[in-house]
Amino acid sequence: MSTIQAGPERDVRSFLGPDAIKSLIKSNLREYGMLIALIAIMAFFQVVTKGTLLMPVNLTNLVLQNSYIVIMALGMLLIIVSGAIDLSVGSVVGFIGAISAILMVNYNMNFLLVMLICLIAGGLIGAWNGLWVAYVKIPAFIATLAGMLIFRGLTLTILNGESIGPFPVGFQRLSSGFIPDLFGGQGIHITTLVIGALLSAFLVYRDLSSRRKQLKYKLEVSPMVFFVLKNVLVTAAIMGLCWLMATYKGLPNVLVVMMILIGVYGFLTTSTVIGRRIYAMGGNEKAAQLSGVKTVRLLFMTFVNMGLLSALAGMVFAARLNSATPKAGNGFELDVIAACFIGGASSSGGIGTVIGAVIGALVMGVLNNGMSIMGVGIDVQQAIKGLVLLAAVFFDVYSKRKG
Image (cartoon, rainbow, N blue to C red; front, side):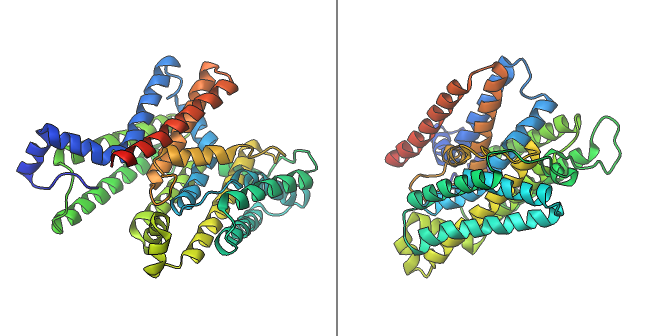
């Protein structure tokens, strides 16, 4: 984060100075702008829905309704950062759901084995898309559009136009189950609060360690007031969310899965060589090749990764519906791509963050949920989401021109 130079006196003067504040806002606008927008949207719907939005039951539904979008947004982010796109993810969700239903319902296979088979199938589908894009050099838009049509057709074929279900209880818990309370709380899910406290402590420790490392190498850091305020707000948000969920049933299983994935992909994109190479490839592919990055293989692997996450999302969605339907996944690719762009990913590649993609997905989810509570029609919802996406991309283009 490039902001203001360190030092106690410098921090205070820099924070109070109007020029420094302007510089601070400008340098962090992409990172925090959409987070502020998310908070504003949530506050708006909390008021107009008379408190319904942040009720524990509705918060849980919000997580379950958007879990598969968040999961796929993590993979789509890497695709977009690398300079490509994947339009087939929605069809893959439906196809994987159909495979899982046939294996579990028609052939009575163990759900754990079926989940493994579906993940492998998702990886192979991603490899299929990656083969055409990375090695054959077919534009990603065309190759994945073909994939979208192929796997939608296969879904309709193997389901024969009918829904298949229900699933075993163990498989349903992937989406509808909750973590057990190890402390046996009465009325309050104590394990949820403990997890929230541990997560908050970890995030503060990681941010503090990063700041110390920057100071050690005499790099620029944000003012101490801003640093403290940010961590206080993050901790308050996490503990507030955990408290609300603890008063209901605790953390859903799928939310724990999402948190693990967000942590893994956050680490991958910020602290690994592979992550830096993906960003380098998206920023300037030829320069990355001259630097020794095997861009073809790297692009191929981003599609394989996308296939795996699409398969996981397909199983989460099927588990939530407790059946596989021919229309499962319709339009999901648009929500996933929109989530990444709304979260700050650049349409030209090379720019984007995991947290941004998650925030973008939450923006879409809160809009859907809030407007549904208000009784807004699906047609108006689609129009509003389209305007939000257009505004996000406009912001990206405008900020580049100003830079």
